[in-house]
Length: 367
Ligand SMILES: *Cc1c(COP(=O)(O)O)cnc(C)c1O
Image 1 (spheres, rainbow, N blue to C red):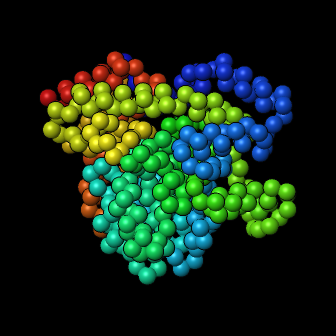
Image 2: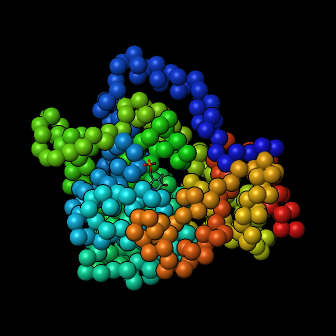
Image 3: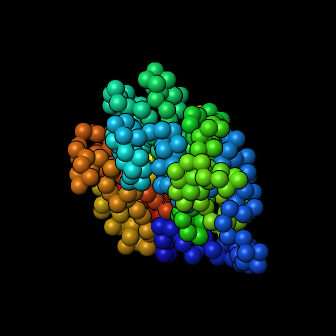
């Protein structure tokens, strides 16, 4: 068997006829920028998540950056984020003029609230927790810390569309959340794309103006702004894909169950939280990230067996990137975890027998 880590061709092949129909329709209408397909998608996205507002933007990184700008985060501010995230989270913080302060994570790989607490100074203004691997952080703890210290929370939910904590979806907790539609994300477009979702009317109005050159709905320039709009064509495709997104999430959760059932006896592994363990969490499994003893040998062995795996962020937690001025140490769980973390294939192109083959190979490696 040959099982790639991610099947980029399948993205298009899965519903090729329908996608071509959408592209033809958009072309015939000449509807490219800020058209009704984008508005429809924004409405449906907000409805799907259970928030009041959604705005399509150019990509997930811009979404974080624009949200921070809209919230007034800037010069002399410190923003705490999880070191176990994509560099994009830190870049967005840096490019509003604030200082990105990396925090440790815990065994479910989500930001560790006690680490957040220990990093708060008089300059701290915000927390940007990453809703990583399709899971929400313990938002009760983070909201408590935020309230006690007068901080805002903007969720980097690039990987979290559809994830819930105590029945609340991403974006509903404080100032809002940012989503990425990068092709390999849970809801992937055919290029770059992102969104900002929120219940906060002021945040919505500010991001809406910021993403379109500082223009309001009447085309009047009312503020400084940028060009960061989600293409109408991508929005039309995403709108269609959103209509069956629940089925995709169900499939991902079924794959997670298969992994769980077939790997949980292996003592050398730490698996992600099971989809059925804890009713506080509803995980959408953007990734299936395990911790494995002898990780590099396992990765090599799986590769030789035709199975593609990936170490997230190229094996570099953000705080390890000394070239950007980070200390390189001081977050013990993250540092230990990065010697063991590995992502197994997790996407809707996978068949049960492929997942079982992966599990068999992992078993035989440890035997
Ligand atoms: C993918 C990702 C981003 C960046 O999203 P883009 O759409 O690629 O800009 C940011 N944060 C996290 C956690 C991501 O996984």
